[in-house]
Length: 401
Image 1 (cartoon, rainbow, N blue to C red):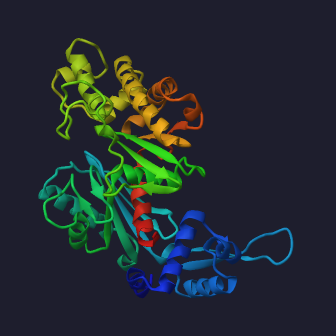
Image 2 (cartoon, rainbow, N blue to C red; image 1 turned 30 degrees about the vertical axis):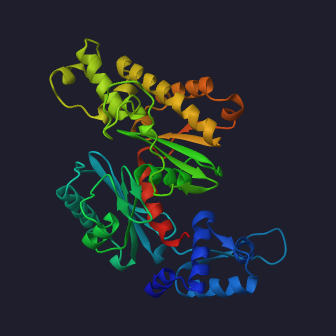
Image 3 (cartoon, rainbow, N blue to C red; image 1 turned 60 degrees about the vertical axis):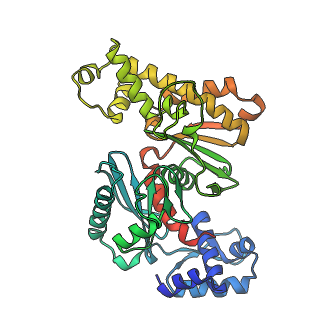
């Protein structure tokens, strides 16, 4: 891609901003004709024709041939040129990292899931992450000059506009995005992991035209992503979605945020893990009992696998978590009146074992007139939601206003 054009976007020249709008239109709508584009952008057909011609000549767009119509002249379809640029997404998990590469059109070109990595909030942990990403880039079969942006998903409080992370790798008085960009040698952005999952589901998952969506990420922690009128809502400082830290219980369990009674302490992967160990040690039986009683550290994935294998104790705890979570989601539905609520994250891999209790609690605790408008479903992208979202954010952050 023409670096001069990227510079123009940064400066904010009038021509570059129109081209940026054209690219954003194609990101969300796929191929379209000049006539459709001129209506969408409220520009004259000759003006749009001029810009489309320049962008085809520069390699950003492709002419995909004639659109079949019932009569009259057949207009040409234009869309993004997949080879004009590439974007990398990095999705950090508690015990692994996922890395993907998409082309300009949004197709996944390379994907590596579950690369071993233990998230450690230290300089060493950050350097290890950079080493993994650099190794991934070194093996890519594309010109490295065509990598336009990298987006890294970070858990906790993240301001995507300023590039600051306040929960992970917060060691210097400057943006984490700038530090990682220096270490990797590429333009880089960061965003909250749940928000990235939300965006991935919105662009390539189970969202089919809905504009008001809540995505609930039930993994080790608990967070939500909010889409209002087709736009991801970040809040003033980028801290929206801290659903897990709603004070919901009168308990003495200290959350990792330092407070007691957070929803996350009773409705999350961390809660599932803790409760299962307590109940096994209290004499209840599970297919994981031997490992737990022998002192072996089990993983969340093993607990999920036990649910799938119909382990009654694991199923019972997941259902209890679903009911607690559903009661609070009912409150969200009363507040936001969304068209769609998506249950995602690691615990969503249990499918109906988690989702059905959530639906039951929502029916019980939300207003009937409100909840009848809200469909509750399980994530379509499942464990790929974060990496798909990271890649898509790497692209959209360059071209959206």
